[in-house]
Amino acid sequence: MSDIRAWRPIIFSCPNTGDRVQGLLPAVASELPADELHSISCAACDGVHFINLQTGAVVSPKGS
Image (cartoon, rainbow, N blue to C red; front, side, top):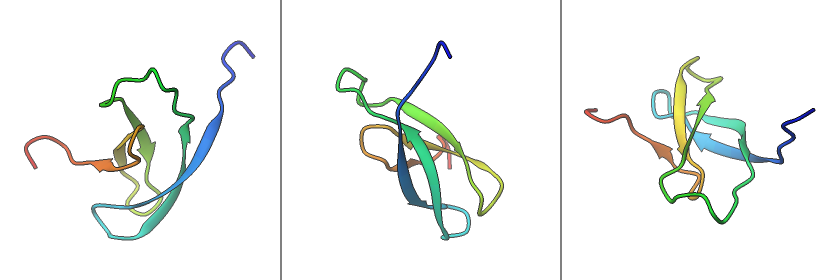
């Protein structure tokens, strides 16, 4: 139990299917950089998406 984190729920739209997906993100600390990303497994498409921890927005991969 050396790394205990607080988590917050999030609901986002899967960019591949458009379905609403529920997940958990680490609690945001005010000292995080604005572009800090967290990977989350998507139950709708079985893929991985990146969520901006400050805004909660799904970040599209570069070049897409």
